[in-house]
Length: 312
Image 1 (cartoon, rainbow, N blue to C red):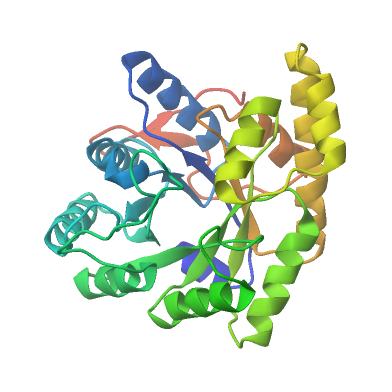
Image 2 (cartoon, rainbow, N blue to C red):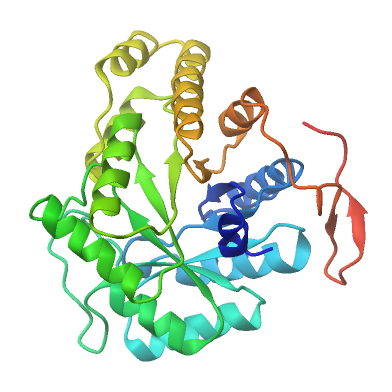
């Protein structure tokens, strides 16, 4: 089933996010991470797209390999920034040729300084809603978009933010995935605002285990996310104790995920940074079911199933 069909059925979607590595060592680590995640049979995995399109070729190649070499279903990231419409059509075609049928359409951050001025390509697109329409025109894709529980950093106010989100949905988005956030109430308020605007597209919350104080503070600043004081204090106290920091981050993320699911969130999207240990701990702590299909093996390039080994 596609993610759109899973959500339409009333079931929940569980997924994991990775990024394209730059080195051979990073590539081996990613392959191991994918094998570990494959054992819980998520509904999909995604591979991020670097600022300004900087990782375009690596992202497309890794997404292709996931399709051909594993039983995982890839959701392809695609950003408008830095690309002409012709280039975007070419990338979408490469995804289609690889068998990818789900795309996360994003305007994207500018290269260099993610918080710097956003300048559209002279032959490109200006808004994520334009990219959603383009993907729709290029083939039979399901399209996801981004949502921001604490408002997009570039939105003037909440009315502006909701207006842009609704425009993406009206352009053809099937579901949304949030940016990272750490307070359940922020997600609930976003959901209420969308309902008040008459927008009922499923919004999957993204969960990022905060296991390193400096890293999470930097990411939160870039994404306009607030780190709760109690979590910040626990991570600060564990600066020199990675084990304690890991436990604090996993405990907070597990409690957040449980509260979201209790309030009928349509699933969870785990941000792994290519290290899925914390995400897998959370997933298993929540006693979440795995899909029956595709849970026991991966495919070799010829499509023949091969054992994936004992659970991690």
